[in-house]
Image 1 (cartoon, rainbow, N blue to C red):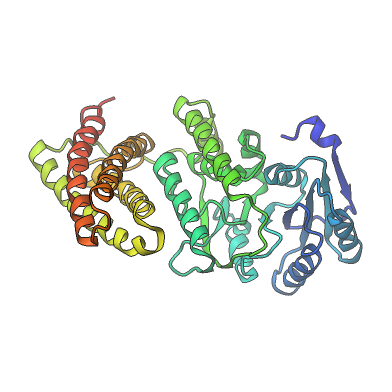
Image 2 (cartoon, rainbow, N blue to C red):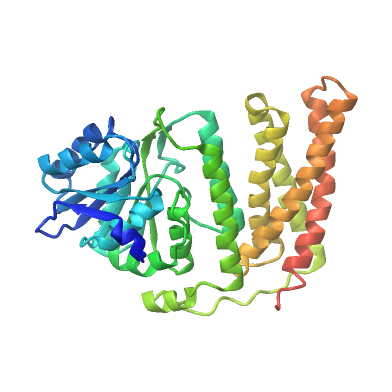
Length: 410
């Protein structure tokens, strides 16, 4: 809910008499140049291609340039455009304020730069209007998505989403795409539980929705990176890491009323989970070896593919992280016979601990190699990494077997 300070700092302009079906919220901060053309383009698209009454809400996050004046001019000129002014910054704060006060049954969020192709807007909201899904998100990581952006942002985005899979066991593919929608009745239940007011806001919302058993619909999108993006990548990454840690602790300690939400939304399990049948040590060793071989091959291929672009150590980090997450998931299912979501978050967290140990072994081996040999060949590098990975594999089996096998009855 919005605190009283935030309500006093909020100014609504130009109320609309007819309640819309869609409310498209655009949070902005110092966007006086791009705001006008982008809102006019969005308004024209909605008017010509979306067969539902709509509203566009420009949520101004305490801009210090002429953004608010431009927004007011657009509201006066275009039917169905409103302005919400907040005295404090924060994308999450703006979305919470706009969504909480909206009369629309379907609430949408879009970045002001319209990096996402607007053709995906109707597929985004249709499952929510029909009642089939509870939330919908655009994804730039689907096979059919078409994305234009630099290597740095691509690596950061994929690394962040892999980190979410490993730490919070998320099943959605792209948490950060600025193209999302939610049913208003669902938002009313989830928003009071979301603590972040910045860039981690929508990730936290999605994680809570997934844990509450809600249906999250993903829409592949065409997306072109905005070269004039104002996002501070380092500050955002640090804030996201703090958010992951805070949310992970809340989920681990049971501080969130997820059981109540599942019951309220009617998303309790349809049937008890299947019994977990223990797998004997000889079969575990055999299956673990097969998974290990596949993971090592995937690791080496990924390392070779990224070595020339990223350098030895970053390529090792990326390759090891990707294969570590996949390795843990495969060993849960194939080696230790664990299906479903039983302790999945804990197992992936333990897998990341093993990943850290493996990273120390492989990175240390690479560093030592480069100290001993000034310019080692790729073949020598790969040989050293294979040996280091074998040691990490033995350690992985011991630790994973202890956590997944001996504690199964807990």
